[in-house]
Amino acid sequence: MIRWRWWGLATMLCASMAFADEKGFTLRAVEVKAKPFLDAAAVGKVPEKTAITVTERQGGWAKIKVGATAGWVRLLAVRLGNPDPAKNDSAFLATLGVGKQRSAAGSTAATGVRGFSEEDLTAAKPDPEQLARMDGFAVTGATAAGFAAAGKLSAQTIPYVTGDGKAEKGGK
Image (cartoon, rainbow, N blue to C red; front, side):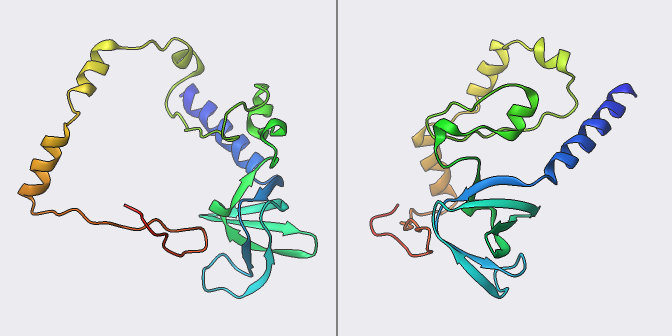
């Protein structure tokens, strides 16, 4: 029962943190929409690496403000923090007192952990038996090819798509 109360408190704290304005920048030139829909009216354009303020999130969309322009952009077109990775503090990590992110790409992906206490996570140890069991699920190229042939599947070449939605040549 205590864990659920703690979890509820943590959830409310995280939810309240999500409503705070966050600084970020655009990863590419984007069209700002009046509403969080692809077919919504455009209210402006924002160039690549422009500093923005994210005021709200909804699904895969972020409501941003840049000068006099305010509206919605796809969340994948935005990165929170500073465009210079060396100066990029993560607000969430800073809240926990962890400090600066340090990765070659300048960003970090994190996943949530439900149902585990801090003590459970601290006491966690590797389990070689489980790792060996997981390795048992791996397949070789020949096994995968046999599976594909049995299902009458054939290889296809699919071009890569650039940020502006155009297909690149030479994709797989």
